Amino acid sequence: MSGLKTHYAAFDIEARILAGIRAAGLNPEQRLSAEELGALDHFHTGGLRASHELLAITPIEAGDRVIDVGAGLAGSARMLASQIGCRVECIEMSADYCTGARLLNRLTGLEDRIKVHEGSALDLPFIESSFDVAWMQNVGMNIADKQTLYAEIARVLKPGGLFAFQEMAAGTAATSYFPLPWATEPTDSFLISAEEMRSLLGTCGFSTELFEDTSNTHLSRTSAHANPAAPGQLGLAVFVNNLAEKAANARRSLEEGQVRLVRGVCRLN
Image (cartoon, rainbow, N blue to C red; front, side, top):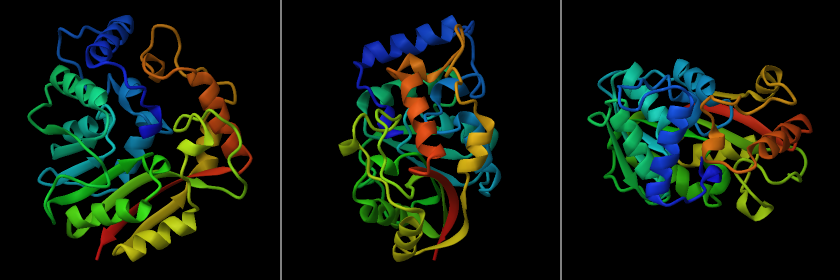
């Protein structure tokens, strides 16, 4: 999610959210559902559908406490809170996105189940063994120190806790098409291979329950010339400049094997 940040002023991001909602024919003065906002606030490859699919393979219960790492506008957190009934703590580096996430929590009536914290995934502001589940989608691509990232997630999980994630991994060739959704230029992108990812997770105390490459499935679902959002529909273009170009570069990178899309569920030993 980090690669989509554009650092608008807090007032401006609220105005953009409200304008986008109204342009899509929704009324922010009435209670909105997490599903209605799904095209706007799921800042990762595959969008809301990918979040649903990750949830389908992650056993989360209403009584669980969940941490959403790199939560962006907290779209996944609202999905979890509304569908499962669990409580979610979001950690997000961008103050602007924290502001936007809190606004959307209010508009969906979920502010009592979701708390948004500004901070770094490399220094989580929680004590050890605080959470039953950690959730992360398309965040690690912008973080060079993945050892610390996974170690911090392990630290705040309870023994036996789950780590559910979706991530871009390095492919068989260097990434050459920029800008990408998560990186304007090569210095913004920190990809490792799927094998390195699994090895690091094991080093940090995780055992793998599921780990799969979903690149081909994603490519088969998306048109090579897909419009990110039709006029009058909610979409990431509310926040992301040059979205069509970035999406096209990401698809080309997947097609040519420069990047891979993976997801998994790991359990803390």
